[in-house]
Image 1 (spheres, rainbow, N blue to C red):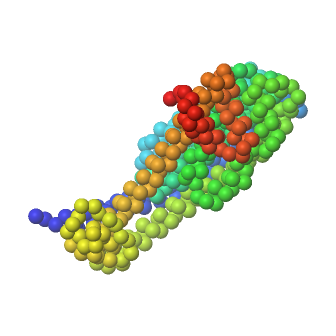
Image 2: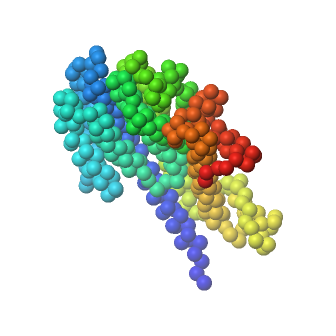
Image 3: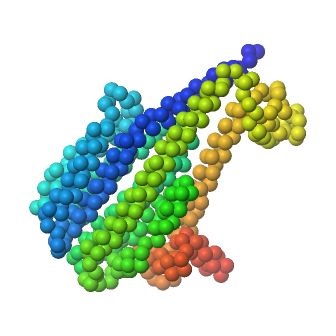
Length: 413
């Protein structure tokens, strides 16, 4: 029987080279990702000021719109200059996303004209701006997507945070509209609750995958200020909003979004640093692999169950306790074990997120049943309890469900 170890080794080298090429492609797209992110942020700012304009907010004049529009135009020009020529890129998925985003952006000029003439409701304008931003978000992650598992956590953190930031931008626009007219409809109140809930989910996912420095930066600004929370309560509860200043709300939320933009930039830099580290690791490893026997011991041990023929109760290590397997094969096993562990960790994190979501849904059901309220009111109550106790909504929800179970109260599943 032919020995297949050499074949396995060649395919392993090919796999690592493929990963290196994917990481290099991502590194080459750094400027494009930054420019697209800047365009998204500029569009979020134009969406906010357009909403105020459509609600006839005081102190706003057409030049305010023009200033934001010029920022978007400059950011769009910078992004277009960095788009790769189609014949120089093989990723068909990127082509499709780019076509959709550019087609959507072609509608920006007529959208602006209708906004200027106030021929749109603020809700319709916000929806169209948000659709533009959605296409650009998809373009970013199509460009950043690659087959490297080492990038998955950094990309998940960036994607989750950018999604949360976009929902925060929609919250700014929706709140500005309601405060400008002095009242929030039932639909707008429900929309705000949904946006806050969506942000909670996005930032929870971000916290599971982000690096420690990015987490620390987020912790310093995660909790909204007292004034922002007060205005949120007014907006979500249906209280009289006539005494609130729409532009004050807009300024508060804009400061928060600008802070998020700085964290987003840091996350993007982190993605690129992980990318550089991965390329360096792969190139260094490849340079020392002309012969399997030249490899250095890695000090790695791995338990393999149901292997009585191995010494030390089934333990393998990279120094060659079981030389019949060969060091190269041990390296393959090591790498595969690390990948499986990383995937297991991510699945566990996602499972924890799902369990927390279930606890929140059950807690809302309990509140709706025992307080005769609807879902938005139950969510508002849950969030207020969390703020009052300085805890996360998920912690409060789990405590409620546990108390209900202890006293044999009925739960909705």
